[in-house]
Length: 245
Image (cartoon, rainbow, N blue to C red; front, side):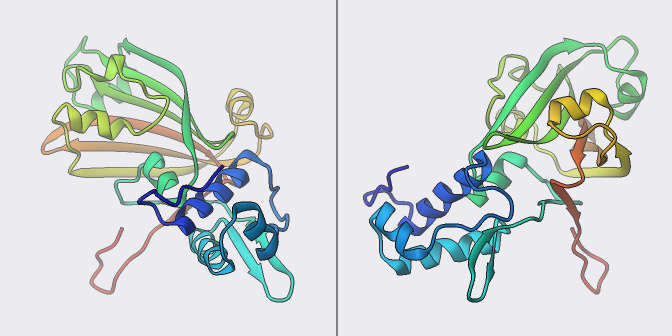
């Protein structure tokens, strides 16, 4: 990646994104040392101060860790999935400076399972747009998502390009803005299909998250997410008044 001095994005931000993309692609393995300041400064043609700012941004995002006297290393920890918030994988990865993409495995109108129909308060015989996506950061899969949206709510969703970006952006373009979510999480062992798609070991631990998004008083999306336990960490923050996310 060539940095662009004329870009409105600061050089340190561009550099953090470039290094983040290398980590996501697997150019730097988990636990591997990141090249030193002098080497990066020569490669990208920037000052050591810019390198330090970029590395600080990567430390804050959780992608790298620093060891005094030894240098910076690719962090072993998973990405955070904040519970109780309007989490968007696409927006989260953009904030970390990592290239996000999705492999769309299914995108069609269908009659949902009975449990999904009840959650969305659909009348008998109603259909949804069912979307199954493998969410990737760089080339590494992180989430296997299945979403159901009543097809009367979002006419654009069936034909939308969902290889990048967020379903929520498409919903908002159709005038559907989520105002409340309810989530349920349980631990699972990845079955053969899930493990194959996520490039994980069959039987390895993971999370199954079910999420109902409501727009006003209208159930708008039911989402089921499978996440390998070594790549995703569920987080929540609470205040003394009981409020939190």
